[in-house]
Image (cartoon, rainbow, N blue to C red; front, top):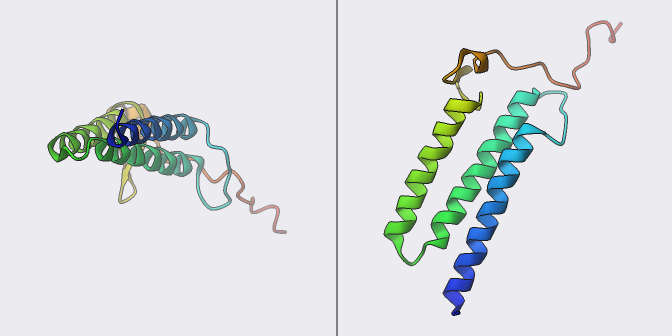
Length: 120
């Protein structure tokens, strides 16, 4: 096995790890915030993990740039389609885009926000 195949397998494996981390950690965020809602944290983790995964999959196809471009475009379309179909992770200018009305609800308040009664 030559070096380019080893690198390709390594990048593909790292892509799988990033994809799994992005999807799993977006369902169960590991931290809470006083300024960000849990939905916002889930959204950022999902998009970060899946974008890194698609980029790693595309780079692993090099030097065949056509295959890499195909993986990049089709992978991007798949993660957007999944986000539209099954999550509330597409939010543009404050509006949530989702196939189901159940996912179009407003974001939850930040988990560590202080109540107005606490400041008295």
